[in-house]
Image 1 (spheres, one colour):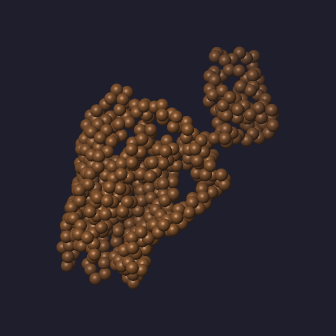
Image 2 (tube, helix red, strand yellow):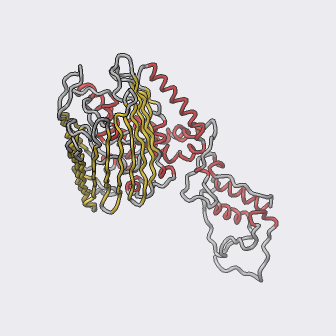
Image 3 (cartoon, helix red, strand yellow):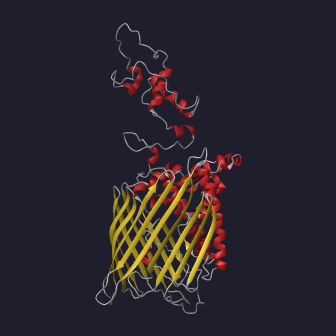
Amino acid sequence: MLTSQIRAARKAAPSQKTTAGPVASNGPAAAPRAPLGRLYSAGPAATLGAAVQPRLEVGAVDSPLEREADRVAGRVMAGSGPVHVQPAGAAAGIISRQEKDKPAGGESKEGEVGFGSPAAPWFVLKPLILQLPDRWKAASNKSAGQLNLEEQTLYYNFVTSLNNLLYAGIMTEMSAYKPDFSKGLEAAEALSGVSNTYLNLVSFALQKDLEKYLGKEALPTIKQNLGWLILYGVFLQGGLVGVNALAEQDLKLTSLLTPALKPFTEAPQGFGRPMLRSNVLDPRWGSYPFYSSPSGFESSVTGFEDPAKPYSFNLKLGVNVASLADLYPESDEEKKKYKGFELYPYFSLSHSWDKEGAPPPQFKNVWLAGMFFGGEGVYTLVEGGQKQKADDTIAETYLRSGLVFRNLGPLQLGQLTSETSLRPGGDLRARLNAAGSIKLVDSKSFEATLGAGIGGLLPSATQPGSVDASGEAGLAYKSYRPDVKDPFKTGLSAGTTWRTQDPFDPASGRLFSFGGKLTVLDMLIFSAEYHQFGQETPLPGAPTLPGQDLRFMLNLGPGVFRWK
């Protein structure tokens, strides 16, 4: 803004001309001060630059910036006192673009948090609604080879999301495990690698990546109107919860807030457990509650849809401080290489209570809290939790701590952790775990990665130990097309785990899982998973279920939209 003011001031004062050569002068002259007001109160020392100064063009002629600059220059030359510069976005009635460089005096206006205006939703929705015809018109005039990277991602996510819905519907009818639709959709998203199915469908309808729009483009407006947006969000969310309650469906208390807050609540890279394949549909295979680390912001009340399940209130929340501080690179590729400061406190809680006609809950309360922090590629993880029975006695106390390494040379990810579990009437059990993933080759033509993990349950005074193992590998060949920057990959990736159902009980039964993906020129993707269960315990009154599960999915790849 200061540069445009200076240029406008020169334009408004014809007597102060710049030339291509030296300035002829008969001697020094005193610069006028009084008519210029406070802007030039520093005197002649506050110069405008060298005598040879090329004209700097800012924006188009008669643009909002140009008119605002002319207004400021006129006030300056008239000597009418202090000049209040109006932000360009406000002058034009639009949202100005967010700048990385902020004024030396403090935060930029885009970064300020305020209660805002009652019209806040319109400020966020206006670009989505008013520009929708133009976006669809532009899309209709483009061929697949003319799509930019963002458009390619939008279309690929849309096609794959449709396939996710189709696959989830098939799973509910054809799978022997009879999952509900939401569980089938989770299985589909794990196979396809594309999540947020419903958000992707809305994004395609609007021809706008909503996750990116809410997390980046509209973020300044959201911050300025945060108070009103929260009030509207609570009101709308309450309406959705009421509809679910009338339909006797599980209550999802944060379905609107979860995607909007994802950039600030999603866990950092390397936070979860590496190479743990958990896409298991068999209801006999209960997941260990402390192995699901909180990520994001979710809250729900379950037990309305399934009469055999007790009521349960569930909450999980994490706060990504690095994202709040705008430390991550804007490019997704550069973000994967980030190894700077991280601070991520998190918490989860599940509270269950009796329901008439349903078995009593196994645990009344299960909670877990922890923190992930560090920098320069080296991070520390500390967490702890408890399980409580219906009579408020403690069923288990759990602790975990360790180190996480990220993007240190060829080492993409490494973890060294220890875990302890204390259960009344039993021994103190301890585990040691190590996992790492290395990029072996990353050249113009080939890409190869290799990872492995091992976990050991140490023997106690009365109980034996056990060993868990995991691994993953990937190899891809890159080919190129004229006028297409990114390569087309053809390759194979696979991963496997072999683990106990209860990580602190070697007699709890074992699960072997294998998953693989075959990619052809980034245009065709075949995914498959296989799970084999050992020593499974039949559920009372439940039908006989198989001990093996094989699933697969065939998808178009993102290369379809890049091919020229």
